[in-house]
Image 1 (cartoon, rainbow, N blue to C red):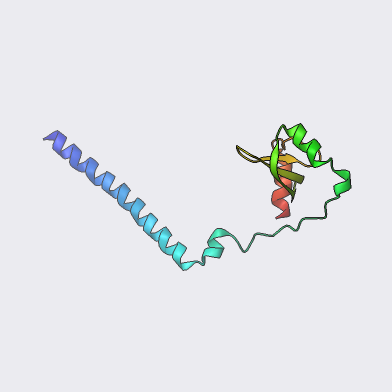
Image 2 (image 1 turned 45 degrees about the horizontal axis):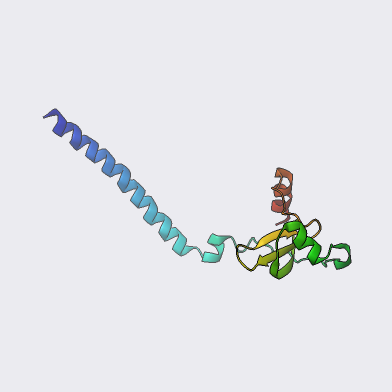
Length: 122
């Protein structure tokens, strides 16, 4: 008899917790449908960064960059990034490699100061 009473009490509490979770889930969904999706995504706060001009004369040649990166690219694209100019080198097989256009080496991990500076710019 004690097991039946205990299991009934436990079942009621679990049902209450699960019911509250479902209620909050449905309520959150209703709120998200009432707010425009652009606001939910934060698109109104995003600032598009315009790339500055690249000084190609100051950068090493693409062949030198590919040699340093150890890649034989079949396609290469030069991009301007917040960390400086970067080459996207696409080899015949495998994943594209993104390297610094100034050094030919992959970008290292970002420091906390760099992350804060990029976040404050936007």
